[in-house]
Image (cartoon, rainbow, N blue to C red; front, top):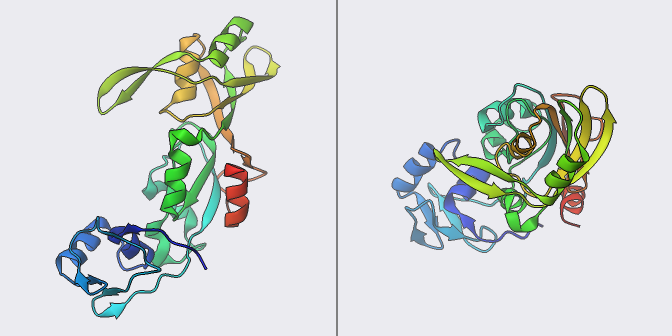
Length: 248
């Protein structure tokens, strides 16, 4: 049996399949139909352990099953990684009433392809995205022209990139990376491994050494690999296998 820690009433309502949107959850809470250990709850931010608490919604006691699921997905080029764009790929794989609880962990920009994790386990998403974890992410990349040894040294040591957040531009010095050259013709094909995930980071890193990224595909997160999934294909993984590949 899964050992749940505290989570918000909103998360519990979603996992129980009782709401499909934030508005539904707000309406349910405001109706004073959510009772935890005999106390009426109106705040969706209230936290409790669903394994240790009695939770009653609209007069019915809620018992959460362990419905956590984990998928790897080969994101096609041109697809946005919003929840709305990703969920259609899960239809027919998970129950319709459970779809709303799933979301992509992190994002790949529209023109980047490759490995994406999709789950309904919010704690996993938080753990993967936590910068303190420094989980390595490897991308197969094609950049224009020949990449010089000097540029490789700069990129591996860390470069200063510009980030845009909430309409404001800031400067950020990237952590050390690792580059493996795969082939050099008119352009350079390589693998780059970074241990963070700032917005459009790889593309911005190569901009600092005056090389445009022509192709970008994430092939690995930690020890978790894309395997032989075709573009647009999705595959479920056992929790143990996923966690072993990410955190061991």
